[in-house]
Image (cartoon, rainbow, N blue to C red):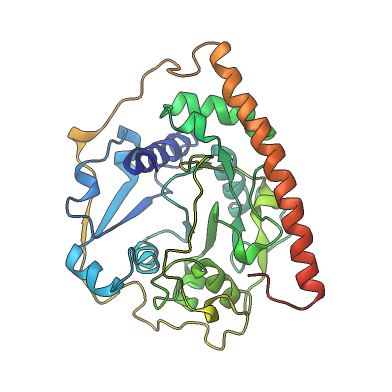
Length: 333
């Protein structure tokens, strides 16, 4: 499904650029959990100088990763918990490796944090989430640079109505999932028994809402998260071949708030931490490589409009189906 290292590097470089523009480089850090790589990602990823200055890599060695995940392909719950546990920030936001976090979100978050805006929710004591929008595969597959991406988001972002399942917070694909670090510690992060596929975010949400109010900051701040789509539209993508997490993971009946205990996030294990090597840094070209002329900008615009129409119709149907399940008192998933 494309080049995951490029997507990771692009996501880090993009948000780093936004952070430095806001002069928040001393306030924000980026933490990457490198789960079981034979060659550490920090040795091979291409980062800008801004990204190098604020990014840390936590490397979980392959032998430990394989032991913990057993027959799973990827122990994501452990990886995410490792990153959260070793973060220093007062607020910890979990994103996927290929999600672009815009300056608009950062501005609105810091305004709320610093008391410069009137919010209708308690930032410190809420479970915060937002869905994400999909940048068309036809554009992403060309590996646009940061200027291309900035042009796309600033020009077409408001025309993109592909945010996912925003009505169903506990099952929404994650643009960002964010909480004060005290809440992360209270609930112990993701349930580390859920080493297989699906429902780990659902489980986290259905534990959180037992104690904390839920706030869709996508609706409050705007949907300022964009996913670098990497699945071809023609690909019949199925999950049936994967081993799924047990059914109880998607239940609302969660008697235990913190199933991992005090040692969540591999607290007792010493892990190697590093920064990316300067020799691997990259400098973005100063011109628009892909969108350098008006004709080249037509294709992503058309793709965005078509995808927005398709997804809008799809999620209206999903929403009606969701409401019928609520009415029948049936689980949505």
